[in-house]
Length: 97
Image (cartoon, rainbow, N blue to C red; front, side, top):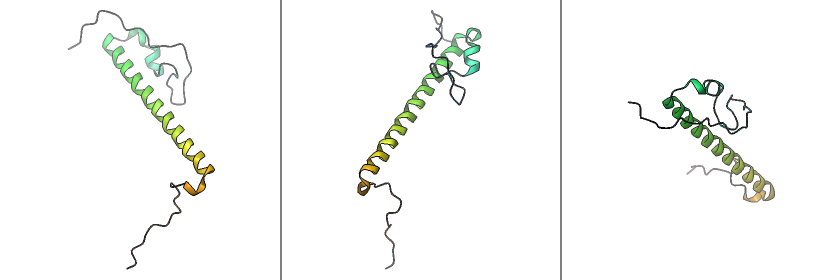
């Protein structure tokens, strides 16, 4: 059952109309079809697109956060190589008894 809405959903466009390598707008996170068909979508479809855009934005923010964390770890490892605990060359204990 479709929920009644009293206002049309405005376009999520923020005026940054560039696409990333995956084809999503870097400003509003809509794909090409979602951008071009916005005026033809029902309110329920528009709500779904907005929900998807929020998910995409959160995923991008998380990926950027993880990349920044990895960069910081690499910088710390370069400054203090004796504290690089991510090094795979550490000897694992062997059971030779």
